[in-house]
Every structure is written in C-alpha cells, then in structure tokens.
Length: 61
Image 1 (cartoon, rainbow, N blue to C red):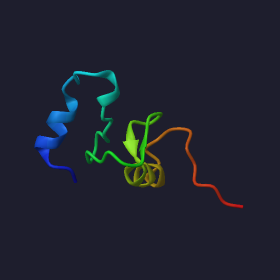
Image 2: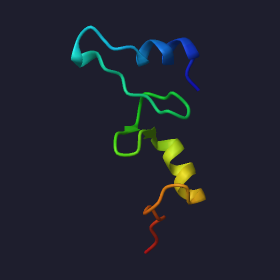
Image 3: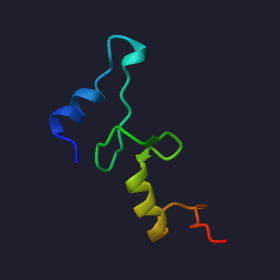
Image 4: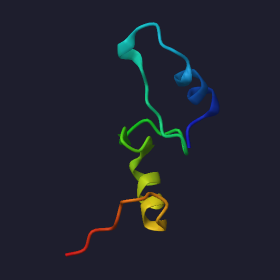
C-alpha cells in the first residue's frame, strides 16, 4: 500500500509529459501496472479470481 502523500503527488499533472506516474486505483502501486484495467497485477489477480472483471477467466489447460 502506497503512502497517501505519494498517491496525491502522482495524481497532479506533471511539469513534463514523460513524468506521468500511473498507479493502481485500489492500492496505489506503481510497478506492474496494467493500463487496460487501471490496476496492478496483484489487484488484477484478486479481482479476476473473484469474477469482478467481465470477460476475464482463469486459464486452465
């Protein structure tokens, strides 16, 4: 879980476009962020396992 001050700072518009930091909206993590879903891999896995993301299934073969 990221500090609230870090999340607030990253939500501001940066001075330069290359300084944009994308964070997970659930936990605030910046690494392993998936743009398509707007969340990190750990939150994505939890949500997909619970069936909260439509169209995503756990693969088995």
